[in-house]
Length: 131
Image 1 (cartoon, rainbow, N blue to C red):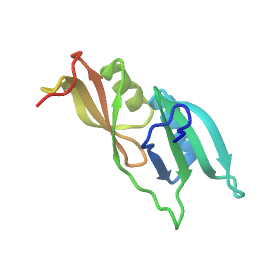
Image 2: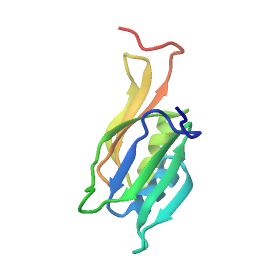
Image 3: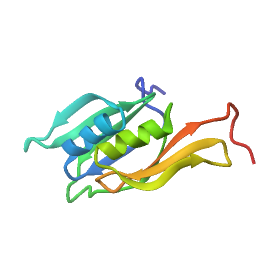
Image 4: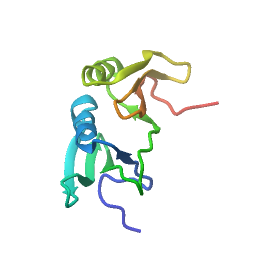
């Protein structure tokens, strides 16, 4: 099986209204890098790809056939507080302040302008999750 570089076996695919704005948030607010954009005949996003760290996600303009589907995502970053501040500065709203969790992550939560929840996490121990 061939999987393109920067994609995983499972790849998040966002269907959102105002996909252009969402792509801007992914780049400016979450530190992503846009790598591809195809437009529909009406000029809206048919498919875009944004790479955040080692993961590529895909984004399309929502439609009647594919309505918006907000979800929750767990995002590992180098500095949870700095990443949280950047996301908030680019339109996200606070869900949970950054704090140390008993499972070894420093984590906070935000909701983006499209309804998705992001758990912004920094691993503070160098060990796998345990029971």
